[in-house]
Length: 274
Image 1 (cartoon, rainbow, N blue to C red):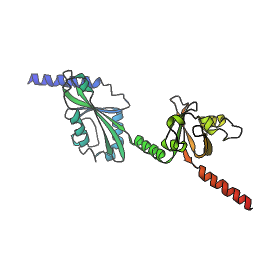
Image 2: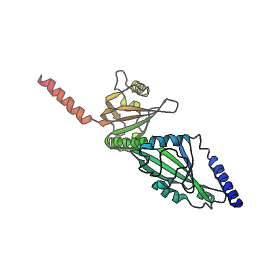
Image 3: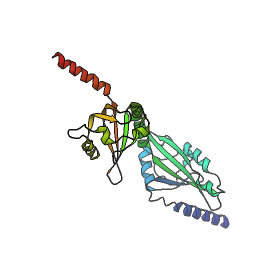
Image 4: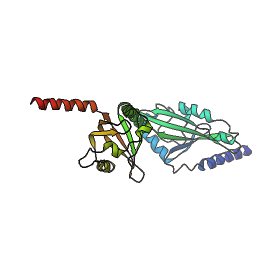
């Protein structure tokens, strides 16, 4: 009996040592540590905050959670986590096997949570628990949907901090009847030159856009590849680098060349009649 208790204490100490080596307590990532029975041994502050935010809907996916405390809670009633943990709960006899992790997404109410379950093994390769990382991906998912909607319905041209074209979506490539390599022959300055008074080289407009002035409306745009000019309606979005300086600029808009021509023709006809 004493030997059994001694082994139990040794195993507990071993688990704590392995888990502490993860240094997760101060991490901004929401992380928890569970044993091989999916009992929560520890959860860092970020994890506690996330689960508090999810508390009103968490019972719909984790039926056994009382909403009070994470430590000691049983994840066996969280079906997605139970299935995921089974896939990683295998001995790691080879060093490379210890890197295997299971990634999945769980919907909690209207939130999308990304979960990564990483197995923990002792020096003999025996599985004895998991580190589970939780991340709210709701905003990222919505952003991806928004970007897709923009790509599907509008032109998107990307410029680097010097004004060189570094990317364009399919809608723009179809407009110029070219490839990404063809689009990259253009620059912000050459494309939007002449849109402002006394700005024949486009430098003034570029300065205003990269200076984060709100510039939107209809713009004359020239493409070197097709040697054609278009009228584009839209605005510019500035993406900052970590130091707050502009790193990239995106033009998002639509080709309204045909509409502009019709309006000009109608104006000319109206002027002729009057």
